[in-house]
Amino acid sequence: MSSFHSAFLTEIKRRLFEESIPRTRKCLGMLSEEDIWHRPNQMSNSVGNLVLHLCGNARQWIISGFGREADIRQRQAEFDEKGPLPTNELLDLLDKLEHDLLAVFDSITEEELLKEHEVQVFKENGIAILVHVVEHFSYHVGQISYFVKAHKGLDTAYYGDMKL
Image (cartoon, rainbow, N blue to C red; front, side):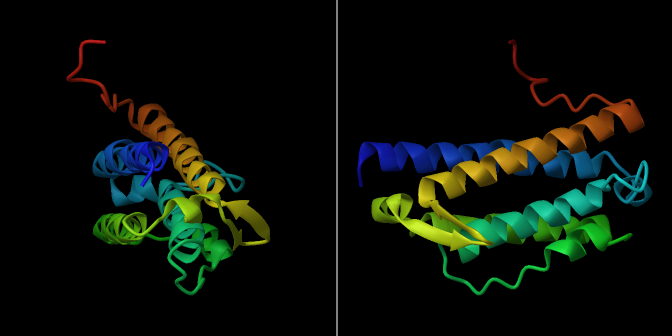
């Protein structure tokens, strides 16, 4: 394993498992089920929809893309869900996603990072797939965080214990 391969996967895991997924869990814990399924308007998704979408996206791009699991994603259903699915069910989906992602990450070779993979209608190399998932998580976790701050007037305090 090259130092780049190791450093890259370590950073991808840090961004997902130490930032994005914990922040999503934290936000879910700050919201009621009614809040989680609130849609500000017909053109907006609820926090619950975004959690379903993030899980579906990561499963499709990484677990199916690298892990060769069958791609059974129903993308539109992620947005059509009106809920309320219980908060614990969303948290369980995040837990299972984290577990399944870690299993795939342990098997990603340097060759897999450089190789082209077919995902959705795209052909992307492994590096692009992992960057996409991290960026995609970051984007939607930002939306979820904004919802918590704007709708509840709460500070997520992601860096609350640090002197920046």
